[in-house]
Length: 255
Image (cartoon, rainbow, N blue to C red):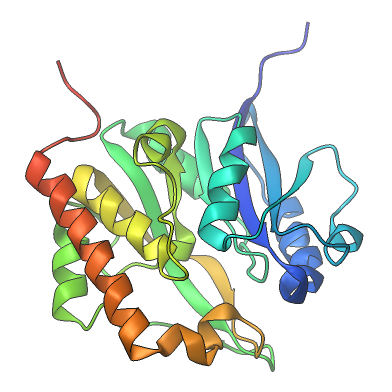
């Protein structure tokens, strides 16, 4: 009888313009070395039902591909949770890549300390010419206490000290918070601040994500920086985090 293996679930939302980057994301997954007894399962959820993505989905039994009504990346990721049959959920955008060791480091932190609900890590922007650019305000390696991300975000013009695209989350905590926020953008920031409101996190200073910069990415479009919409998004993200903190529900629950 083969031993039961544990899974870390990689969740990716994708739409037609970003689908051609899936091969690079897949290669970065294949290059991961996991702890003994672990495996990854990649759940790719198309934001819509088109013929534009299927061609780029790897033919691999570790990959599940689903489609659904278009509702934005937050909706697609949340729908992907229907197939998240593992202990932890790792975010990987279709156009990004994981450096070697990223998944193993996330697993090690969450396995070592049950009081940690989520992890983040250092990011390098991957530029079109192949060069990388870092962020000069990374926090120290170690735990992130509840409320500290919200405080930094409020003091730095809605910019957190850790990147939501690097999140790895305990699946039960992610489900308890309802997945990603139903917003046209900043849905991952909304999740980060909700996690920060109810649980301890962790930051790893080793690079855990290559964040691709390219003309077609959603955050580079004019609509993403529309002032009125951005202010409304930030208002509801902040209100949710504050409401969670006010109601004093904490993870993990102690009896």
